[in-house]
Length: 117
Image (cartoon, rainbow, N blue to C red; front, top):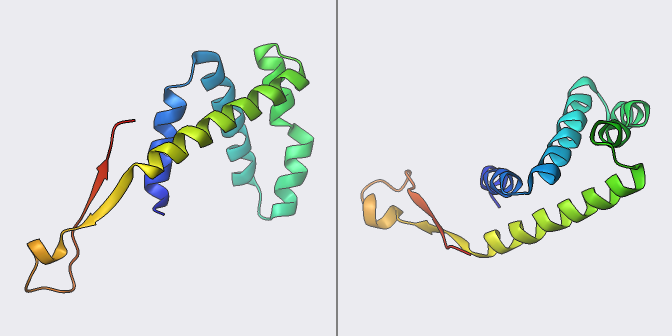
């Protein structure tokens, strides 16, 4: 599976979330990404997560209890994964190489076809 396509679909799905869900999700994702960039190892990343807890920061920022925030994130991630799965089922790479480049086997031409949900 092409990771860039998955990233594009995921950004599109996140952008379509209701405002509060989108802001909470992006806050936590950005905080976790910042910690990951500061980390050299997995252990260091986990240590920073424990120390700075993006979930606790988000709960304070958005005035949620930590439990409610965890529930919301599970709901958001479930929704994102469900929509992403549907989108991935409805796309297909079509190889047009033979139609376009009969003389040059080294070049490849693909089109991404998507279908509306």
